Length: 280
Image 1: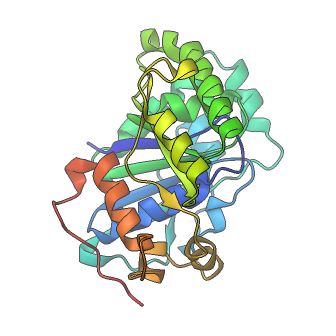
Image 2 (image 1 turned 135 degrees about the vertical axis):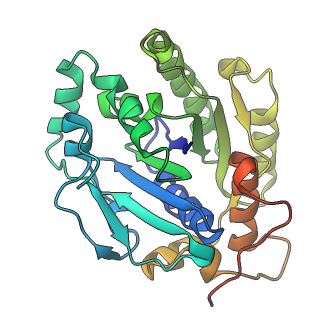
């Protein structure tokens, strides 16, 4: 059965697309079959990696018609060990899908049930979301077995993350009655620098008693550092674990960060101490 992981946040510009693309590429290089889904009306994930084959349809047809056969495009990423990286492209620039989901009785839970049809095809499905609360984000959250939220290590952003995310979870929790229970939430510090302030905020977020989160958010040990490797890799359309395999100094290389992130989020897919070889 494919595990479904949705990268979500009620705050925009926090690195969701970067995390989705690079985590998916890392898992593919472990030899797994991975499907990315771009559930953002701003289709950044759709152009993150070059495509080898582009399907006629995309996210709109996947949700509205349950069309799985002709909505999957193939990336040009040549994954290791028989792995693969496919993608459902965003094709809703006007936001009409949001309105369709809102006015369809089972709109918010349809994606969850549709994706069960991929269980024998993929090992992992990673869903990128928009940074604004709405029906499409709801559908992506409700489709997930696990939620991952990048958090900038700034006190105002951290507090907004906790308040907004817990509010979203509470609002969607009744959807469990429709067969869409909310998956556990993992927070991950993103663009973490080495300042004292960032460390204080990280410690505060990791406390179970952190005010607005009320223990509903588990903050991962893995943090994505504030380095240029992620931006450079995206510019060259290369997975970051291939772009930066080694790094001198105390900050971990991108390959090591992706390894520990995959091990924390998807431990059953990641062998102990296994690393993906870089391509240079």
